Length: 521
Image (cartoon, rainbow, N blue to C red; front, top):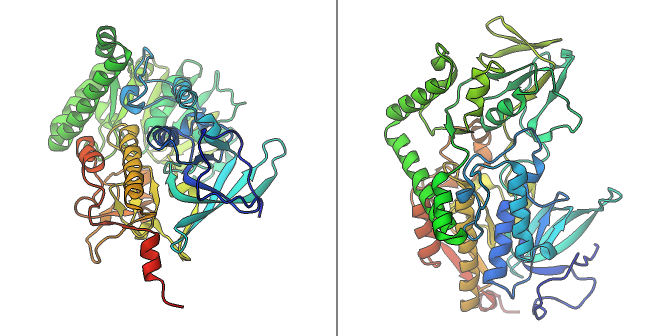
């Protein structure tokens, strides 16, 4: 076992009483945050602000912070919701465009790291392999693979932690989802997945086929259209695509009138309400919403375009996520003849493209498989509790963040129907409240326990393909709070920010409890 020396200085504070002077003992952290993306950075900031005396580290498997926004490098990669709600409540979004590209989102995140003194807490090239909980010591023993970026060699180190905040997102970073396409080995061109965009790919003057109809495809097609000979979005099923403004003019007026801080807050509140109203309207009046979206699409497309064939999904709005098209870029590319949409199924790849079920062959020099993500919870780490393997699929989510039967660990999962970070901000506050409650009452363990025989259903009521493929691996939810997964920011504010911590389902214990239960020698 290799001991670990911190990469940089921690907060100026007295040594934590749990830290042992033995140099061969594992380093102990009060809180271990897994992942230095938008969720992990938010968690680190909350810990510094609300628990300045606690020791913590943010372990990041990759060599840079930013998570998704540093990983994805495909053309045009951008946010799919406004940065007033996708950004943090505590840090105003000052950019002119409210839907921003990845470079600006990444700059925003790294500014947050610097402004909140989180650089010293982030340890890059540290991948968490497993975490084992011991009820006897009320600690996690965490095994980490640390890689030397200069040599590429790895070693296993061990840490202990009182709490794990898993902010690794919910999809695999090392691989995206690509279906098995017949005949792909015959294709003489290049096949790429957006999640691993090659730096040497030159699409200028070439025929490109993008397979997919989700947010990635809707982003890629207009971003590449000006440089290709032609680009085609090949979809099996249409998606609801809504053109949205790149700029929020009211936000600019509010900032001018109220200043950055109050203007950001006012715009954020406005957009939270707007998101909820749109979602509720769509769910209550799906037929009317479908007609509104179709009419909007028709206005942005050339006369006589087959709107129903290519832009009318067979499911109701928000059964899957609506795709935003900032500035109507996709519709403009179609109108200018630089891009096209084909709704069909692939029979096989050929030497020069793809052959469709209709008999049509699409010529391609480059095929982009924008076919989705592969879900992976907990960053792929193995969990055990007192020697028992933990399967997330056998657990219920308590208040949308803790796994039933698993102590002192939470996972950060944001909204699917609104900006991801809205939920993350509430979860960061909630975990800090739980830690404060434990301090006040002398507890060191918080374990959610569900009632036996509680009716359950999938954690996510969402029809996206990447969710359906992973339902058997995801936690479940119960019929009501605190076991139901809320999609309402307003409801979650009450559940996570205002309701009491000791709800009868989150069971607390401490050293005195363990001593009382210890059998006599």
